[in-house]
Amino acid sequence: MAGGWSRDGAVQDQIDASVQDAVKLARSRLPDGQSLTHCEQCENAIPDNRRKAIPGVRLCVTCQSELEKRQTTPTGFNRRGSKDSQLK
Image (tube, rainbow, N blue to C red; front, side, top):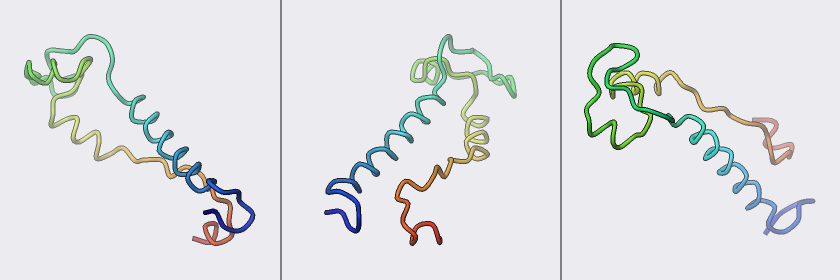
């Protein structure tokens, strides 16, 4: 059930598009290629289990956690376009 000038299913289409964008962003951040034996930043050894679980891993758990804390997720843009959502 869509409201206003939108067609039925438009809200779900917006939700689906937002989810697809988030999945695309997450996949683009995944490492690729040969895993390193030592962390790029701190040079500590990367455990074998981590290298097997994440192909292409380049950072140890500690450095990866710090990197993820610094990364921000994009807020995207207003897909809805209603005045209410633009005022927030």
